[in-house]
Every structure is written in C-alpha cells, then in structure tokens.
Length: 595
Image (cartoon, rainbow, N blue to C red; front, top):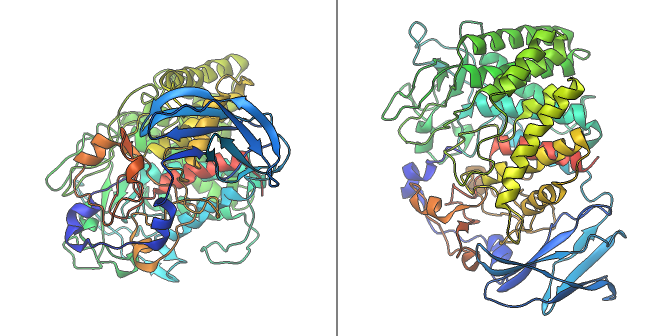
C-alpha cells in the first residue's frame, strides 16, 4: 500500500522476536505438504501440493482418517516441476474424498497437517474481515473506545479553496499508516454492499453501528458499508468539489497509534490533515508528482458506491437513499466531463497509487446507476465503456506498477451483465473468460498460479478467485474451476510457506503474528480478518526503500526462490494488512460460506 513507513522511521527499528511468530515458522520441515487450512467442501476440488526443497521423487500418496485407516489411495502423485523455493512439486488430487471429517495426507515420509472436509468449513468467515475494518476506522474507533483524527481536514492544491476546512473525519485508514483514499474506500464500500446483496446469509448482527458489540437490527456488513458511505459523502461535498485523498506520506514520520494524532502537516502536531481534490492534472506538493489525467477513475467509483448504497438502503433510510442517488448522478457526470485517471498524491516519498485505467470504473458506475434508475441510457454507457476495459491488463502480464490496474477485477462486467440481454451477458462474460485464459497460460506450475507477484499480490489472487466464481455463475462453464480453487487454496495455506494470508483464518491455522502494523506491534492486538499484502518478487523486496527485517527470518529456507514472504513487522511489502484487500476477501468469503 503506501508503504514508505520504515524509510522515515528506520531509527525506531529494533530486534523484537515474537515467540508466536517463531513457532509458526521455525522448525518447518525441509519438505512439506501444503493444504488449504480452512478446509474443503465435500463436492469441491481438493488438491494439496507437496513441495520439496531439494530434488526428490514422490510416486504416490494416500489419505488416512483419524484412526490412521486409509480412506483413499494409494494414488499417483502428479509431478509438476520446480516452483519458487520448491525444487520439486507434486499435485495430490483427493477430490473423490467427500465424507465430512478430518484427515491427513501421506506421501512417502511426508504427512500433511489435519485436512478438514465438510459443508460448513467456510461458514461464518465472511464476517471476519469486518473485525479488521472496524479497527481501521477513523472518527469513532471501537478499539480505542474514542474518536481519532477528529480535525480533518484542510483543502490543498485547489485554485480557489486551498486552506478551507472541510469536516472529513470518518472512513477507514488505508493500511497500517493512516492515509485515506477514495479509490480504495469507495471500492471497499461497494464490495461490502455487493456482498450483502449477493450473499445475505453470510452475515449477522452482533455489533452496533459504531462498531461496539451489541445488535442493532442492521446486518453488521451494512453498518460497515454505511460507515464508508458517510465518509464518501464528506469527500464529495458538492458538484464543484470532488476530493480524492486525506493525508499524505508525512503521516509516516511517526510509527504511532492513531489515537495520538502524531502527524504534523505544518499546522501543529495533532492538527488537521490535507485534503487533496481531483484536479485532472498531475499532483504532488513536495518532491514528487503523480501522473493524474482526469477525474473518471475516482468519479466512477463514487457513482457506483452511491448508486448501490441507494439501492440497498432505500427501504431502511429513504432520505439518505435520495441523497445517494443525487450524488451518484453528479459523480458520474463529472467522470464524463473529465475522463482520465485520478491518481493518489505522493508527498516526501516516491510511492503512490499509479492507477492508469478508468473506463472500468465508469462502466461500473453506469451499471449501478442503471440498476438504480432503470434509465437505459446508463446501460448503453456501461456497455460502451466496457469496450475499453475488456480484460484487466495485469492478467497474463509479468509485472505492473503499484495499483496500476485497480480494482483488480472488473466489477462492472458482472454488474452490467446482471440486467443485460442474453447477448450482452455473453459478451461481458467473454471478457472475463479471456482474462482467466491469460492467467491460466501462466499457471503451468505445481501451485497452478499465474499472477504477477507485484506489491499486493494477495489482492490479485483474491480477485482472480472472485472473477472465476462470477464467470461460473454467469455462464455455468467450469473450465477455470481448478484455477479458481488454486487461488483460494493459495490464500489459505497452499503456498510454499504454508501460511494463511488472512490473519486469524482459520483460528487454529498458521498465519502471521508479526504484521507490519503499529496496533499489532505496540498493543499485541491480533488483526483478525486482515488480508496481508502477500508475496512479492525477490527483486521487488530487495529494491524497495526502508525495508529491514527486525529478527531472523522464520521462513528463510522458503525464501530462496523468485518470490519471498516474511512474517516480520519490518517488511511492509509482504506483511502489511490492506483495507481494500479485506473488503475484497470478504466478498470472496461471502460466496464460500453462510452464517
């Protein structure tokens, strides 16, 4: 995400060895069978991966139950070559095992962790990312039981309104710093609303609207989406002012708890933070500038979140729904008036969100407005924008700039297809198919993985799984089912490190205990439901500024290949939680299980 925190706080680094983190990594055998730690649905694909750090042959495998009785096998292990640190990999397909229970897989002298099979292994997990989102709240924060960042913010970089105060407290911190971006917050808000619309049985009501425990007769996922919408409304106060960003990387000068409001933007410690408007031209007040070219990437996201919010809330809050409808139309109009991408603004550091595409955002906004208003002109516009956003360019690519093609899957194709004609649905699903094919061509390895391992690779992996699910739902075509399942399995343990990339999922699994998070680090607070950035190319890790591991690498022997991951708070590139990733994985989990 932002991620120059350590560049500016390097003097604060010290060696802190977390016993839990060492227990999660040291002592891992040199060869291992990696599994999805959450488990497998009885009628689903079930493929484990044996990873050997030195060349070896695995001929067969078998599955045994809790009494050590063989229930499946011996079956031939499928050799799949080297991958990452694995000198040899083998795919172990035990899909015919359908009886619910707990098993282990044996392959020669290797034995897996417990393997769970059952119809309810995913149930309830869609609510886990909400725990992380509540912790990320600006304004009232239930973790601190107080309000944080109450003085936001002051407009900057505007020809007539620079210096003006606009009340903008609220929303979510983007990552482990406290910057806030419309591009990620609007996408997250949309996905929360989308998850509730598509899979309401995945969610319950155990928290108040402010995030404190207690039912309030509103599903918790709607409470969190409502929190996001409230902030987005503040960031679009009128049709002449569309704000894009709150704060900049001067926040990184302090590795401090948000309740302390330690940043100083020239107005005193604990003062207001800057509000950057959409300008349609490059921005950056200090050393660096972005390459912004328009409003549309932000405007389309605003329009989509407001339009879906109006649909989901019109029975509960009709007055708010009317406001959201008006705002959705206004945001979309600005996107049409100022086509192009509105990138985030850098400060002292060179890193920013280099979003280049924007037609997908306008397609999504138009599709959401069509669903809200039944005005066919919006559907026509959605289909027109779709022609310029057929396949996400990262699909089939080896690399990309930071957040260059965001969101990671085109939400607009699915939304436009929901109310489209048969021909429109076939065309839009075909775009999804082409993207999945491009990734599948790259996935000729033991883990069946074909994404580029850029910053925030876990977000790409999640979107790959979501796009696979949506394509199947739209077409009934199962040709990418294994690719989709491999992405899900990777996220929850079927990867070289054998670690779940979502903290606390499953509760008895192996996951990060030392993430790049000041709350986790200083308060020993477990960030349940947080999706980590995920593995990156070793070349990226070596060349990022300000990274320094704070203790011996618990996964050193698994970090000898072209991709690396570290459970160390000093690594902001692989081990930092990301807010938009939490919403993305929440949507994925809503498809996999119910409450």
